[in-house]
Length: 66
Image 1 (cartoon, rainbow, N blue to C red):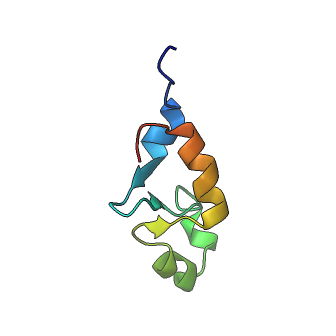
Image 2: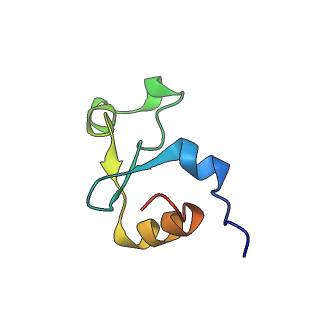
C-alpha cells in the first residue's frame, strides 16, 4: 500500500499536543479589527483547543501526526 498523504492546508493550520488534542488559532482576526469588540479581540488571543467533533475531522487529514 502507498503512504497516505497529509493535507497541506491542515498541516499549516493545526498542530497537535502531546496528549493528542488539536491546537489552532481562533478565526476572525485577520482584518476588520475596528468593528470587533475589545472583548472578542482579548478572548481570541493565542491558540485554542478544538472541540471533539472537529478533532476527529482534522485527524483524518493528518494521519501521521498523532
